[in-house]
Length: 246
Image (tube, rainbow, N blue to C red):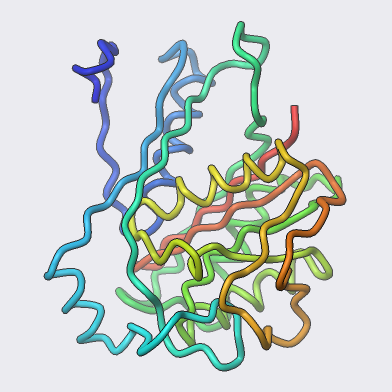
């Protein structure tokens, strides 16, 4: 991509499982913030392969039908394939910003290669890092919400502990789990939501986890101009990105 766009070095590859797209956004933002780059393009992409397909099957993580993110009857994930690109520039540039990256938080719970820490400490730390102690209202959380039993439970409890009452939805019921691209796709959806003022519903969810205000059936009007996009992955990684309307 660097050659095709004629971009200058550095060109970096991020490989952190399903948080890779979100970590790439963090790295790009840091390069711009410290003056190493006038602008940085963060791209999340992953290609589906037989190795991945059978690997998730061997872990009994794939659903037998459509996935049900954050649903009490969830039975696993649906694999997907996709890509998203986010251009990050300093504030006040010549191009109109679609959103502002107001905060970013990351954490590694160091618990298991393939499962989150049950108490959700890492997820809560990532969310707290993105919020940075600010108390401005959050209008929506784009959850990682894969549709797997343990991951959704830990993520739901972390959201309830840090952002009770905030509307939640995920897009993996519509897009599938795009693995390394998921964090960038989630960020893109959050940015589009802020631009349009609407929260997309969680496709496939019918009976949400207790206490969560999951957006069901139809889009809902965004009540505050800030949105959080979450990404979690194998190895215990977690990233939260806080997006604000310009």
